[in-house]
Amino acid sequence: MQRIQLSEKAKNISPSLTLSITASANELKQKGVDIVAFTAGEPDYNTPEHIQEAGIKAIKSGITRYTPAAGTLELREAICQKLKNDNGLDYTPEQIIVSSGAKHSLYNVFQVLLNPGDEVIIPVPYWTSYPEFVTLAGGKPVFLETKKEKNFKFSISELEELTTPRTKAIILNSPGNPTGTVFDLEDLKELAAYAVKHGIIVVSDEIYEKLIYDGLKHTSIASLNPEIKELTIVVNGVSKAYAMTGWRIGYAAGRQDIIKAMSNFQSHATSSCCAISQYASCIALTGSQEPVEKMRAEFAKRRDYMAERVNSLPYLSCLKPKGAFYMWVSIEELIGKEIKGRKIDSSTTFADILIKDAHVAVIPGIAFGADDYIRLSYATSIEQIEKGMDRIEKLLATVE
Ligand code: PMP
Ligand code: GLU
Image (cartoon, rainbow, N blue to C red; front, side, top):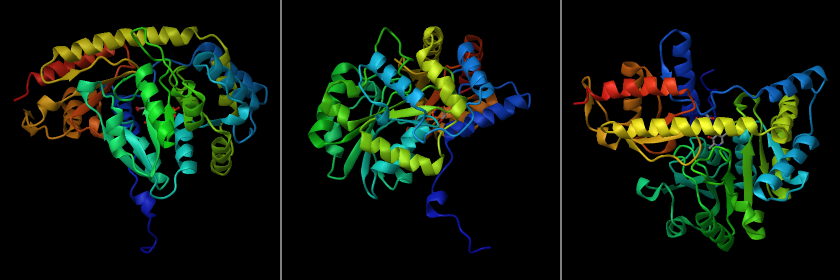
């Protein structure tokens, strides 16, 4: 049995820290430990009632079989309509693929795009799974560092410096996880011009489109002109906007040959995604959008409160995020200091001290490529935010 070894691919893959830390925090809670969890990358709301009902109706009426690999025509048509209404984008159902979450759509994109050694530019901090998607597809992630002073945005000259003949794609995530950065129209125009000039694919992850604040409006880079539309793969889903993380429905829109390849790939990997969830997602996209706005307005209030609390504390600071539901908190001033005899040498150590000594669970910044940050999710009630921030404040009073 000794000679049976895991593949090199399997040996090199680490679990998603966002998911594993969230699961550990939930486990502690279930054991009765009073944990305040700022970990979850998911709305704390239930799926709206009318979407729940649609799921039940699907089960009762026998919508319980395999669907076409790329998704039901009904849902793909609803997605086309959504992309037209919200983003001014014209796609046909053949240019749409429905997958088991936006994560799965992104996984598929890189599987069909990359040859060994192809490079993908990933701005840092990044959502934890991006580099893994690229390496799992045999590609090479190329990291583009961004800074707080520039609102975690990058300039085209910085991008040009990293561009080589092997550059195949760049990942754009606006509104972004973990920083909440939103790219404005000017940023997008410049990025589009760069991509068109070099013939580089833009993988545009727009999953947080609906969670955007301060009166900002989301623009899809694909909508700027026909040339960039041809080079963009728009990725979105129902998880965040409709509190449907567990239903596992995401989608991608783009050039028909790319989408067809993804569908071929998916037909062998998962057949299709859950028929019941597809039916309910159709209702989510075509039904009342009121619950989305209610949830967004609530997140905006929590964001204001949490940002104020973070910035009133010693050692910690953050920018007020423009979108999504995460606070990207600098712990730079804490590095090298001690809490209860433990030296804070990394985001992992600080996150460990926070959960053990303050019973507050956070995600260490290293999961997103930045070891001098932690990520706090404000997808939890104001009461929990208040309690968690009080605990952090108390802990920070013991810093030596
Ligand atoms: N992109 C980003 C930036 C995310 O934070 C998430 C959250 N998991 C996803 C994509 C994927 O979401 P899902 O697979 O639930 O659609
Ligand atoms: N996207 C969420 C997060 O960043 C959910 C967890 C995951 O899928 O990674 O926390």
